[in-house]
Every structure is written in C-alpha cells, then in structure tokens.
Length: 319
Image (cartoon, rainbow, N blue to C red):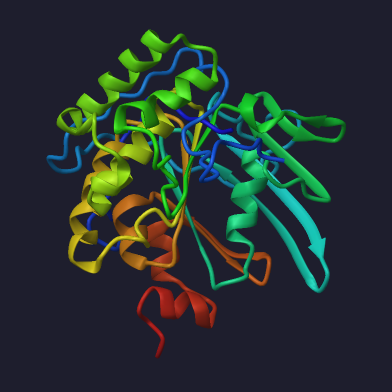
C-alpha cells in the first residue's frame, strides 16, 4: 500500500495555459492513499476549489543526484524532500532506462507515447515493480538501492490511479479512513482524520454515500483525499483526469491544481494531455521508447521540443 503528505510551495508562470511488489489491498486493488507512517514534519492543507493560489515557486535544479546526496551534474545538495529516481529494466524487447530528480514543492509531469514506460516508473517508485537496477531516494532516505528495498506499505508514497479504485462497499468516509487504519490508527482516530480531509475537499455532505453515487469529479477528490490523509512524502498520479468526461475535465483540472498547490512533497503526474502539463506541472520529463528525451521546466521543454512526439504534444507538429 502507498501513501502521501507534506506541504507545498506554489508555483510557476505557465500555470493555467501560459506557456512560457505493492502489497495487496482489499477488493478493487485500491492502493491509493495507503501507507505506513506519516512523514515527520510535513503537513498537507487542501482547500475547497477557488482558483490556484500563486506562491513563490521553488527554483528548478539539474536532474540526477549522486549517491552522496549531491547532484551529479551541478554539485548542489539534494533537498530533504526531493525524489531522486533511476530505473533500468529490460522486459523482452523493451528496455527502460530513466533518471530524474523530482523536487519537493514542485510537480513533475511525465509524458510519452503508449508503451514508453511511464507507469512502470511510477510502479518502481511505489515499490510495486522491482527493476533490474533501481535507485529511489527521498532526500537521504533510501527506498531502493543495491541490497535495499523498502516495502510499498513503508514508503510513505501516495498514489491515485486513473480509475480511482474506490472500495464500492465502503462509504466515502470509510474509503478515506482506510489509509489511516492501514497504518495502525484506531477506528475513531481514522474516521476523525478522514472527516477532516473530507471537509478540506468540500465533501463533508457526501461522507455517507457509496462511490457509485458520486460524480467523476467527486470520486477524484475522494481518491486524492485518501492519498493525502496519510501525510505521504511523495504523491503519484497516473492519468488522474483521463477517466472524466470532457465537459467536467477543465473544472476538475483547476480544482486538482488548487489542491496540489498545498502539498509540500514531490508530486509526479503521468499524462498524455498538454493541458494537464500546463495547468498542473512545474517540470516535465518526456519518455520515448524507455529513454528520457526531454527534461526541464515546462516552459523550456514546450519552447524547444526536439522530437516528433514532443512537437505534437506541444502543438508544433509542423515546426
């Protein structure tokens, strides 16, 4: 199981359209928002949707930090909540070799064509998949390295899947309370924490409903609340808007950006949608055929796409 938490610094000039072995869960295979133990010293504060709040963005830093906690490219020391990832694996004819640094207080989008390895990278970060060679660190905390593999339930990683994977037999309140319960909280404490997060997400009036009685946007908020209630260090979102109707996607996207603005850990969003990248992300990694072809601030990547896929993504196919 996975989880998430911490407080987030906001943001960038290109938001809103400016370009400048996971452990098994109950039925439905829901792992979003479950994990062991809150991240010390972090807190998450989400607010009802009301527009993305602008805050000073944390400066980007070069990707790829060395084993001593110092960036291999710049010599700069990793931040306490930065997520340093290197994944290498081969499965038949497919080879994946990707390395990047996702900064705490910023959102990194991973884009790429189908089969590029995007979801595999998320699964390695979460501990669901073990690569041939994998290095995953949050600050100085090693999750994966030679001789080290922290189990998914102890990683303090929260994950929201495209389908949200809410337990159909549980109420909204109990879906969110499942995270704290799985980390050892008593029933009363877990429900109190869940109620607090439902209030933050404007869902208090829906606490007794079952998931089938919720709209797509409401289900997305419940899944996100369940991921954040455990106060994780890292938040992973696998195409979180793809399951929504086009008519509501824009509003939910802005609402999601508003909530992510208050998360202080490293956030990774996998998406195929340039609108998601513009609205949600500070930085962008593009994976093609298992390799990183672009990385850097969103505006820089959008201004200088160098592959056919990247040009299509940013709307410059004829360039």
